Image (cartoon, rainbow, N blue to C red):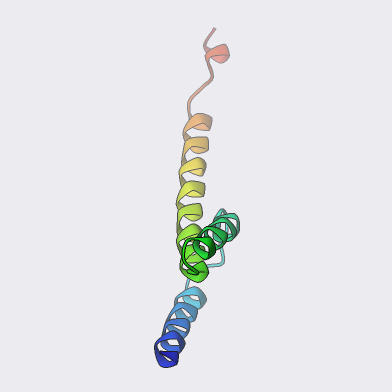
Length: 79
C-alpha cells in the first residue's frame, strides 16, 4: 500500500514540476475540496486534487468571459 502511495506522490510531483506555476483558483478549490473529501470518507487528498482542477477550470472560464466582455464595446459607447 505504501509503495502505491509513494508512486502516486512521485507521479503527481513530476506533473506539478513540469507545469507552469499558475494557481488561479487552485488554492481555494483545493481547500474546499480537501475539506469536503475529508468529511466524505477520509479522502482529503483526492478531494483537494479534484477541487484544484475544478478551481482552475472555473478561473479559466471567468477569465474568458472577462476577455469577451472587454472585447465587446459597451452599449453607452454606441449611443
